[in-house]
Length: 505
Image (cartoon, rainbow, N blue to C red; front, top):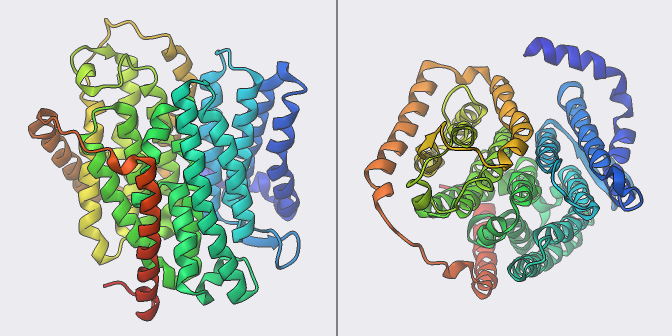
């Protein structure tokens, strides 16, 4: 692995001095190509593929050959972009997930409109991952919201349009809170940069974190996510869950690393999010809703250990995108029905590899990511996050223990799944080498025990239960009310943390 990395680093070193110029061109490329697809519809898939390959090359350039750097495009009050190892993991996730979705859709009859929106979404996600100031991030997130809405409503059914409008309304309301918080940061510091939070009033932190929490599906503010992700087409769900929600999570992580006083707030949000999401996912019988709730939970793992967030975000993006694509090929979304009749073994194999990774079993990247995250927790986080890890194993046992058979004919979608799975599941195998120290006897034993405990609880208790959790908190009016309560809670938490010098007992 190190030999390959060194060889790649030598090949890319001559490009190092051109990184700022390459970055600007790379950010602009998806938007120029995206709109060009309308002029050259016969080349829609090829143009889209070219954009994702360029993104993959750019991420490789940053990972193996660059030291962190920040540069301003329009002066100190303009656009500030940050290029670092943390962001490169998120950029690589976006590139490979988008590539996998394109491969999955390659043999379908998707029109040029679909590929245009996919590439515009890809470009706005890349922009958000680079932004290091609140105003540029606001623009990127708003463009991303429009592209997401158009993809969610792509089928033009009455339900998809309502879900899309609901998403847009909740998102735009949250960004109004965010914008007010940004104005307060500027008033306090004469700057829009993330570092300004250190000298900003608590209400600025509360409003900005509220906006980002809603956009990223964090804690109770993110309960809009299950309906949106579960009702979209599988390729769209794969992108929403794999990369889109992380555009608001990465800024929270950056703020935690830049401003030590807000790190406890981010870590606390991570713990609460992990437990809330897994609590719903354990009892959910609908496969796509379960995956959506687990998106909420796994984002909590990303936030709980900001310093190593990039690696966990990468593995989660691969796993969740793969599972959403697999879920779209299953004969039913209901786990009770799926347990009554075997599925094709190829489908089961895809689902099992991804589920084993996110559960934390060795030989897949999820094991290293979870081990590294657990080692980076603070003492007060450990018990709660281990409970969330057991809950993860319980939830994904639903996929692992589905009945399967070679005699069952694979559905047509399986032919489209192979190239996508080669990218996503292959990525999990390759990324397994990013953290070799994870493979100690103690770490392997702990991971195995955690998964074994989860599987035991699943078979002994959860599989026999029929618990239907209330969906009231997911209603539009409740989501808006929750925003107000969350803003008050974040405000009080910010006051408490700053008064205690950034320490949470």
